[in-house]
Length: 116
Image (cartoon, rainbow, N blue to C red; front, side, top):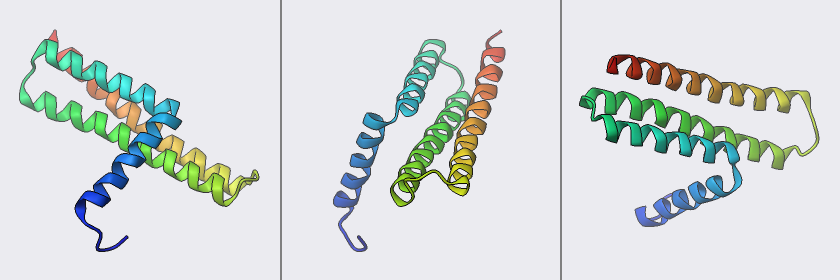
């Protein structure tokens, strides 16, 4: 993989995103929420700082969800049988998504509070 042209590496990344969107219901839910945040931003036209903060919060959730999905897929492939250590790693990764989602929710509440 090292030394491949940027276009090829970019294509691999896009393929990974397509696979994740097709195969992960949670990611599709988060993308729907991201679209709702974008619509809210377009309707309210807040200061640029809110665009940045909300974009970072949404991006954090999406990145956490993608990493969680990748880790779960790898673990399922390497160790298809149930194992306490594998389960713990999956739970921790899901916890990271939960924390990112709660942070995004708090940012959203702060934004909505700023509109009042």
